[in-house]
View 1 (cartoon, chains in turn cyan, blue):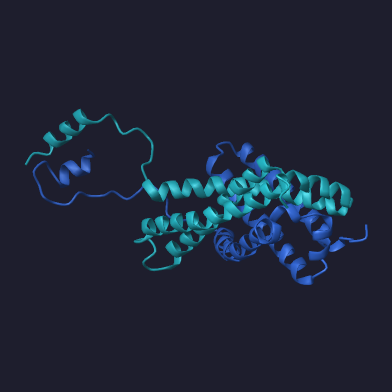
View 2 (cartoon, each protein chain N blue to C red):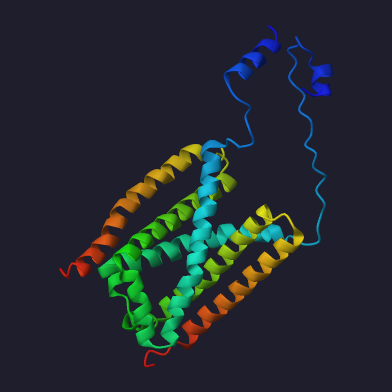
Length: 141
Length: 146
């Protein structure tokens, strides 16, 4: 068997690989962990500042909290909850990969498990979050 | 194909390929274990934050009317209890330090110039110290009859 022929066949079939690391689920879960982490952290700064208005006056606090009650902002809040939930679940997965002997072997399966848990929590979670907002904004409560 | 593979494996040999050692220098021992402590802190604080933050999100956004019921009186009622004061204080400190260390890692990963790295971290640490100080002050000096 010659080692020259297969490499020529491969060259003919596909273009050069480029520099994109093809880490599949392991890599994309890491990318998503970074993005959701940074997103949550930047929100945290804003959230400490808006809560600090309780030290200024009840009126100024109530005014800024009204922003959160807007339906559009409420949808963004649902997105934030989704980001935090992914970061929490994937963080547990990372800890299991680090400390559980079989963690690295099951890292891909564990990702799909946390994706399933995420969907199972987010569907009712998003429903109830938005339900409260719709009820208030349509005047039914 | 490298020279080593040519000489050891050859074209028609069934010998396994020789994998060269990566070109990293032997690990230099530093005086402190700061990075190890940071690594451990991310995991310990992460587990605590799963409970603190997901509990906070559930109570504030889903339970009994969600965000629509939150106002000054609601906060005053909660912070009358030392339990929720402690919960919020712990959450503030852990989340801020956890997030700061995460962003420190990201800055270390993506900055190329020493000056850029220095200034981004200077801004980050300043913002973190000010935010933790402000949040702590608000929790401890909150006055419901303001």
